Image (cartoon, rainbow, N blue to C red; front, side, top):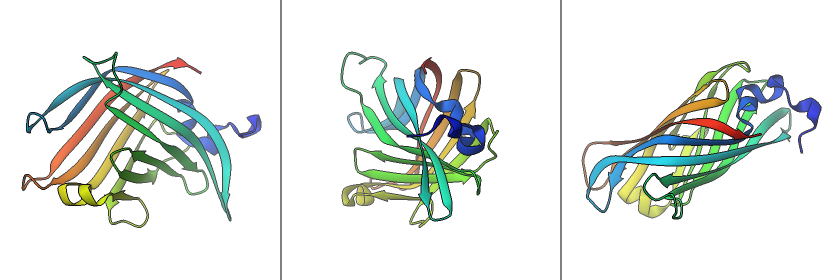
Length: 193
């Protein structure tokens, strides 16, 4: 449990502004749709919750983080189960000014994306590449042969009681020669502390 005196921008960097529960009704997911065998947009509603923890000590490294849960529903299917969920951590290393997002997607992909940013930053980027031993991507055997994620990028912009993201999961698909840019974007507004 994070002590109240630890809840500072000096420790959590820009992540401190994300604590709470957020919802966004204007999400757009561009991806390959297996049913139609073509790419297209899916509009979605999203709910994300962040809670603080830390410090986590790795020798001389001290990480402060957010435990997060995310779920997204197609805008036409709000009364059904989410079509996408994630669990993971967002971390900040104040000494090295490293920001990280570590998450698992239930289809069998794990990503640790990272980047550098100042503690007071209101926008920052993170990236991961397949095969990297620092900020990298792991996936199950099926995905490796059929829809391998070779690169992941994420851009975040934080405003007053809202934040916006754009992500790009670059896929090598077995059904086509060109890489597919599976993108997601949304603006989320705070609904609870």
